[in-house]
Image (cartoon, rainbow, N blue to C red):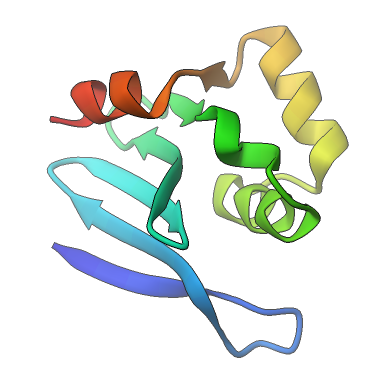
Length: 95
């Protein structure tokens, strides 16, 4: 497993904003809460209901997914390019 912190706007490691890579997945956790994941082989992208719990979390979710911001996240959800699952269901997908 490989893990790293996302970066703040100043380029510093963002405390409690961690991406882990393991078993073909990149998984983003904010304050130890599963927020988003990307399946590396297929490129499938997922978020949990926690993706927009705060403006800060939403910003880091966008960074993780390579999107510009909340509008892009919502558009990706509406277009089916991003799937929303419960934390439990996403954890089951990852295993």
